[in-house]
Image 1: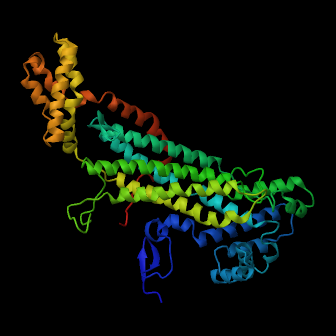
Image 2: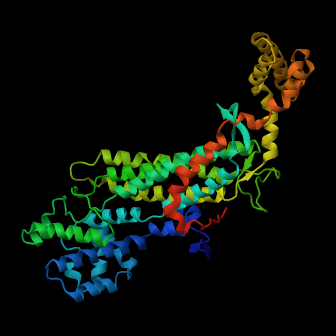
Image 3: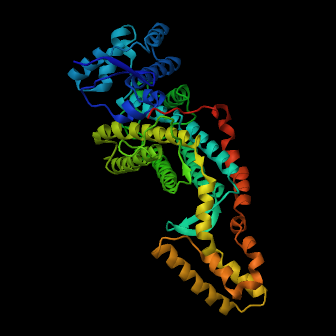
Length: 489
């Protein structure tokens, strides 16, 4: 009933799909991130965890043979998904279904697979392992690098600053970019901290007491602790949580996903700014040669990448409520109403974060600036902003501040009326030049209206911020800094 096979991002997908597939995977996600949450990655990780457990139990004296371990290792990737699905249909238990499926191809090892463990040994440890080794940091580092180069290039290009989305004092394009960079740097530090804090669930048993393992090792507490340490090390972690219930604390999920949600807020703000600036025609995201902005309006160049980031970032923010509520209702040592929720919220959070960062990297690698448009906007507003400079110059030339203030006030309101009521250009400067009162400073007017005299220490702030905070943050990520992102739109 399904027609044809097509290729997308290296993954074979049906051209006509009759059942629902999440757009996060079918439309947006990188093949690497999609694979991280695939059944194959999940269940091969389960098998690796069972192998780690068997190896550690053997090393500590349990009657497990080399043949059994070797048999498990030789079939670690050989998963009969059809059999596993049938077993789960019968047993109504996903872990036991895969224990049976693994045992079927490992008849010698069958008696010792999952020995002493609870379902959360593979379930929770796989989630932590997946989260621990994801590449979110690398993409974020590249976004920061691209924006840092952009900020450096435009560190001293004056532009209108906005407060309340009303023209305010001037800033520079580079300084505004540093506001974005500062938020992204905070996100990077949050991600690093969350990753460093993350621990392996370890080998803890049904209610976290390790009672089953204490029984296996005939009351030898040291061996139980060593088993936990060995498996943790095999999985690539330095530490395991010392206490758990049947699960690791679901506050761990809050900690991990809150950093992603915070990142989502940052990306939404950056891309909203880009969309606002695109409306002003000051800055544009990359636009393909044959890209169509609108089916009805051929002239349009819609900021669709930034819009995609905002759209998906809202989803990432909304997902944050799931781990918060889940952690709040975990009864005593655990309750299973976390399971279905986490199957959705955890993968979708990482997939969404990956997508918005990949899209933002693509945007930042091709941002276009239009200095002449920016200059025109400055010229339109700067006469109003320069009124204080004009007053100070007149005072230095011997004028009275209050008299000058009143003159400027009247002329400013007349010019504002031309702009707002007649739709004309700002003619305040012409009115000042035509008024004999300002004759003593007419020769200074051009200098008083030079945009770079209104940007304060913006260029110096950019230089210091990039050298002291941004560049050092990127040092650990230099190895993969040159990877570019190509988007399918």
